[in-house]
Image (cartoon, rainbow, N blue to C red; front, side):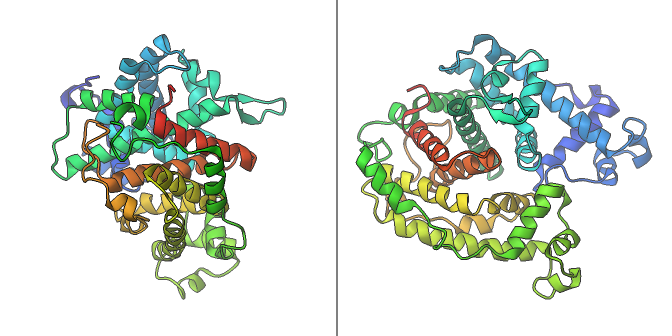
Length: 418
């Protein structure tokens, strides 16, 4: 997977490398041609000798990412069985993303900002001879609408993707803090092994994280506990509704105060009577929503009889909340794209005695890096949020989504090969 040395690369390749480097910043791929030229160390006119405009740069970034991903997935394509993980081949994919974190950010940004990006990507893979993704994820119905072909496998793909990206980002953060992790090869193989076998296959029976059995009757009790009725939550703030509408129309990179004001039917100056800028406006509103969620989680998790139930209550409560407040998810993504300060999201911890009693760090499972209880909590919290976000526009019945959540919970406990 080694690339060319800097001195061997063409100016066009250096421009693309610089463009991807913006993906390592909170705003991801939002950059100007002047900023791009400065990062490469050439004049702005020199860029136009290689790319006619910024859209051409973005298109070339997409092609480069797709080509790199197709090359990485080739080995998986050759050995995959749809119900079994080819550990070595998938570990190479994890290693590829671990060694190229800008591709992780690029993909996360694209998934959050481009409608049907997954379908586009699977189509591109199929063009390059990597057909196993398109083979079980998407198809077009008789009205040309994109639908999920195999929902269970789609949910499995979401689970694997979220887990891989969450721990890659965690490892990257550890390195930035000066912690030396295990070699990337060990990290990649151990993470894939966990995907296959879950807590049950990677922990000891006397570990607190080892799965405890939950009966069907108890699941029903927990579902009833965690269900959130429309009458429980206050009406969604009109600023949220307007902001979410702007994101749908113009994507995350097209959010402006002017467009929010237009959506609200008010003057831009009127917005500033409430807030100094759009970051502050949205941050203060999101903080109130997340504080409400945090309160509900803490109330519900008191009923947990063990850590397994605690984790399910956490996932189930978040699932209920974000199903009713789906617009919050892309807005949180927008905030993270536009600010390196993520303290807002650390405030909503929801930790109680179950998290506080865990050893720090956890001795197992071994991901090729130590895992703190709070990192465990962050990962588990990402799963229902990602499920709601990815399925929000698929017009799925609530019963199907709840079944998907239970599949995810089972993947955590027992792995995807059970």
